[in-house]
Image (cartoon, rainbow, N blue to C red; front, side, top):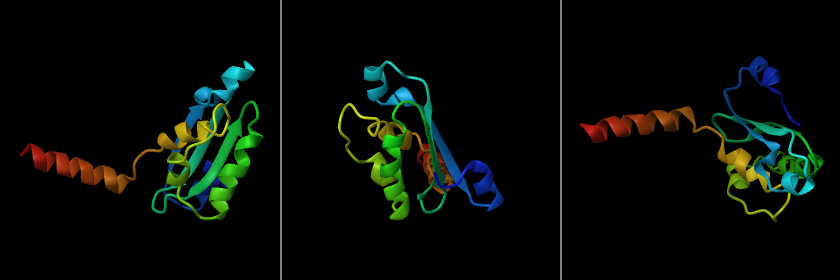
Length: 119
């Protein structure tokens, strides 16, 4: 849903990627079907979700939640910080969005602060 990596690169958009196995949620364990993955592309500057892919059991259950956040223009952190019912596929979104790398400028500031603090 949304853009894939090729499309994001063609548009010259800075982005971050996160991916987790589908069994990051407990629901696949209860179904005894743990094959698959979830992947997201996040805009480097706005934190908006550019694209989302899910492959695995009940993957369609995830689409509505992510699509709503995308249509509303919400940052991925809304889903990262939300609480979801257990055991559902949707609770796996928390693991996915917790894996999004920091913004490059935030990382650079933290490194600078660490260097300054060490002096």
